[in-house]
Image (cartoon, rainbow, N blue to C red; front, side, top):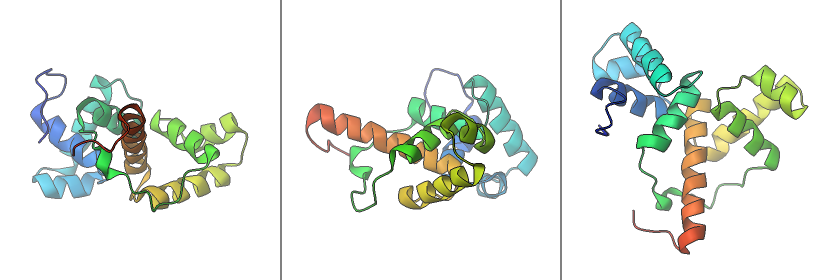
Length: 155
């Protein structure tokens, strides 16, 4: 469990949000932690409020950026790079914006947004959009770190 003494989240909310950031759904988290699925849903809602996030994807990204460990060595250079439009889609999804709104905002169809999200999940090795958004920001942070320091860092 990652626990930060800032007391924003309870220890159990940390347990749940770590799993959300990995892309687990409520049923998977409930089974893993030995709690009810409705209890998991309540923890996610509480974390959304505390992290000022509109939904679980935005909460997972905010959680990981606040509490997760940025590891520069996680980059997988053999994966295809993201297109500029894929970056726009994942950044908007990470803010908690839905597919229809993303499509309107960047001027494409909803099916194009869905195709980008599928491509992003494949390129980032993520089971769903939440894990893809978290991984995108982990890799963006790692790239930023590498550019600043000129190396992969310790990890």
